Each structure stands twice: as structure tokens, then as C-alpha cells.
Image 1 (tube, helix red, strand yellow):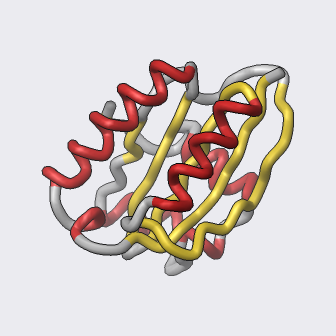
Image 2: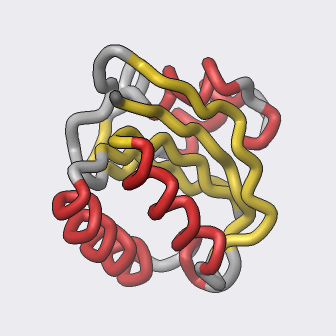
Length: 133
């Protein structure tokens, strides 16, 4: 059975600020998620990360455990954790890249942690913005 987890966290360090840090995260995520057959979409904005992961229960739980120990994340808050019939995210590691204007238009002054699970799911599913892989 396939499961989807949507969560937000606070990011620590340069993750939010440097392309090199983002590239490293994407590279490791792609390798691990491809191995574990996990789909993942992530967005970083103003010190927060939002992520949607999909895969088998054991694989999703293992990834959440790793993220909980990752020093770049703190205050991980799971907004949704449920079985689903089909994937919304096919890529092992997708980065949602918002321009400043896109962020202003979509978030309207809210933080990622202010959005509902459904709102984050829609945002992370590429329904409103261009994505960079």
C-alpha cells in the first residue's frame, strides 16, 4: 500500500540560502529515495521547509526517522499521514522553486507552516508554479 506524508519543519543553517546546500540535499535525497522507491517534493521558504513524500509504509517511516535525526531540521510537524491510491509525486527528489513574486502571490504573507495539508499538497504537486528538478 502507498502512503503520503506531508510535513513542515524549520531549517537550520545555510540550507535556505545557498544553491550548493540545496544541490547536496537534492543529490542525497534522489539517491536514497530512488533506492527506496519514494517520491518526494520539497519547498524551502523563509526558514521553513515543506515536503510531501510517498512510498511504502516502512520506507516512509524510515525516511521520517532519518529526517528527525537530521540536524538541518527542527520542529518537524506532520500535517497529513495517510494511505493513498496513487502518487502525486513521481520524482525521487523534486525541488519547488518559487520566485519572490510567485511566493508573494501564492502565500500572501503566510508562512509555509500556516498552510493546510491540502494547500501544501497542491503547492508541492506543481499545480501553480514551475518546478526545477
